[in-house]
Length: 401
Ligand code: AMP
Ligand code: MG
Image (cartoon, rainbow, N blue to C red; front, side):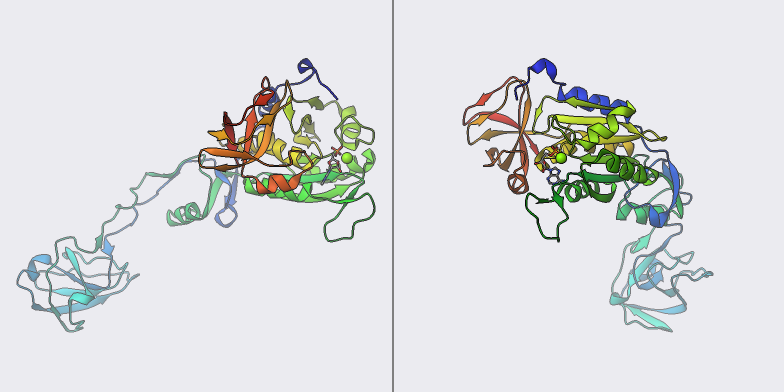
């Protein structure tokens, strides 16, 4: 089928429409142990200095550094100071205290001698080597000062950030939660992987792939699996998901044929638009909102490569926006194409390719059903709408995957 460019909606306009609709998720307070992957909706400040008090960085002896000027010297040990000791007495010149890593530094001490520089004595200690003032002392506030912003709003919480939150004493934190995304495939021909294939069937791949893509993008995916091409069944299945989803992705059932359950089921609502977008793969697209909560729904085309490319171009930016993260166009580089390319007039092509340094090699098998080429690819070559032929050796735009 040929399409005059005027039939087609530009890729950028489709993305702009999506981003104009999708709202950041409302912030909520989560327990620290549930905050992984969420995005901070507040600046987190330190309520105290970190460390909160001067303490020893090593196991050794708290000393007055000047006492070691004529090392080796023998000094009396007044007491043991362990990490967590609530009461630590001061020492004066000529005295030491045996001290453990993390224990509060006794007042009067100005250095810690590592145990390795001593005979390890408990009543008296022989110190063989001199140390500088301040040696092996962690000063209060040298990590973080009271009032410092330790994590800024908009930071995604990974393991290190969970550690930071705990170490400023936070048990609960205000975040934009991880978006929950229901992923639903349609197609009477689809068989669940792990079950035998009947005649005319193919194994269902999109719900697995798109659920994985959601997780890679920082979302939580519910893979609903696939439904047949009955619009009623599709709508019932969708309805059941809306209670737990912040967004829905469907695949298949949006093209020009008969038996297009997604289009047939959603069109009467009037809240989802089905359009032809000027791209290849992935021309038939739908986007809108469903349910009382106006949940965004992305109805992607069924061909696996089309659905994946559509995810990268449209869904991934929307998920970032839902998380309150800045949305920018996919990062691209320029590389020399090692082969000639063809592209349909009026549509932007995203061709599967392998990027090696500054050279990019298009995959064999650019059909939108050819998942093997996508799985072997690590980049997409972008060919603009007005270009139909790209000679070998041309510098092209490449989106690394
Ligand atoms: P559709 O968009 O429903 O017309 O499907 C287009 C093509 O993609 C057909 O060849 C389908 O068999 C195939 N397809 C649709 N959904 C899936 C899926 N979930 N997994 C694998 N292939 C699919
Ligand atoms: Mg179908």
